[in-house]
Image 1 (tube, one colour):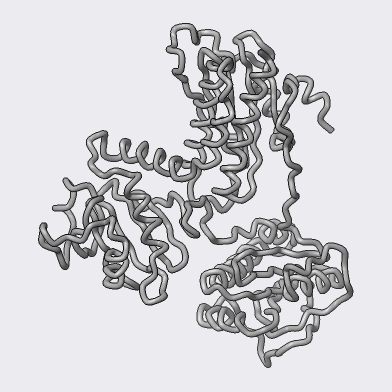
Image 2 (cartoon, one colour):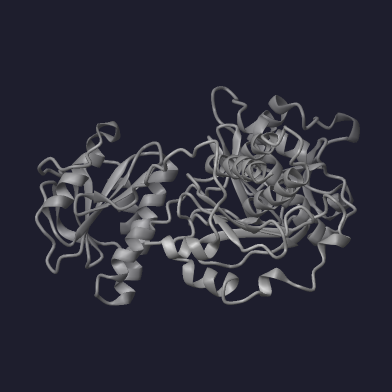
Length: 476
C-alpha cells in the first residue's frame, strides 16, 4: 500500500512540475505531508526548493503541533471532500494545501518567479494538485493513478479560468452570464489570426450583458447584425478600428456589440493584444500573458534582480543606485518591446574606463528624459552602450573584446560571448545583454548571474520520502 501511495505522490508531483514549467520559467515543486493524523510529517523535495527555509519549516512543523489542527476531524468529511489550507507566505514561494479523509495533511510549494503577472492561476494549480492527490489516495487500489499527472501537465487554461471565475464571483457575485472557457478560446484564437500578415493589436473587453448599459459607446451594432465572437477572422478585422487608440472593442461573450471609450464596468475581462503577444486582465489587474497559442505567467519584462542587488552593494549614494537601476530597466524594457538586441555596460568605477567605440564630446545625462530617449535609439546601433555610475552615457557602438573564458556558449552569439570575455577582464562593471528574441542576461566577472541550473530528471519510482526531521539532519 505504501508503494502505491508513493506512486500517487510522484505522478501528481511530476505533472505539476512539468505543467508549471511550461506556464512559467522552469519551476521546482515540493510537498510536505502526513497520510494519517498521527503520522510524522514527511517531505518530498528532490530539487531542494525548500533549502534555506528550514528555520521557518522547523518552527511550523517540528516546534509546534498547531499544523495538525487537533480540533479538525476528517471523519465527518465526504470521501472526496477537501478542506483547504492557505498560502504559508514563505519568501519566494507560493504554497497551497489541504486536508481530507484520504490524506490528513498536504502542503504544496512552488517558486514565486519575480516576473509573474499574478500568483492567482498558480495557486489554483496547486489547489487542483491537492484535490487530485486526495482523490488518488482515496482510490489507491485502482490502477489508473497516473492520469492525475497528465491532467496537471496541461492545466494552464483551466488554472486561468478557475482564477477568473473565483475573482469574478468575489467582484460581482454568482449571477454571471459570460462563459469563461469560450472567452479564453476566443482570446487565443484571435491572437493567432493574422490580417494581411500582421499580428492583432488593440483591446477587446468582455462585459456582462447586464452592465452593457453602463458603457459609453461611440459606435454600436444592431442586435441582428452583431459579429459573432467565434468568428475570429471577423473580430481580428474589427480590432483594426481600435488599434493604437483609447477605443475598446466590446463583447458580451457571444457577439461583438460595438466600440466604446471611457471606464469599463466591474468584473470585465480585458484582452490586450500587442502584436505577437498580449495580456489578460480582470477589472484592470494583470492575470497572465498569452503568446504562441498558450497562456503564460510572465509579464514579459525582465525584473533585473541581479542588477538591483549589485547596485545595492555598490556602496554609493542609494538615490544614485535607484536612479541608475531605473535608467537601465527603461532601456532594457524598451529593447524587449521593440524586439531588438542590445548590450549595456554598467561601469561602476570611480572614473569610467576607456572602451573602443563612438565617444561623445559631452556625456549624456540619462536623468533627462529626452536624452534617455536618445539612448534608447542609440541602443539599436551595433555595439554596446557604456553607462557610468555618474548616470551619464559616455559612448555607444562600443566593441567588447577579451580572452576566451569557460562557460562560453556559441549558441548565444557574439553579443553574449563578448560580454562574458569583457567583464572577465575588468573589475567593477557588469553587462546586461538583451537578445532579439527577448531573453536578458546579466553578466559580471565573466559569469552569467542569470544562468539557471539544469535539474536532473526524476525517476518514475520513489521510495517513501523522509520525515522532515530526518531531512533537516541530512541537509548540508
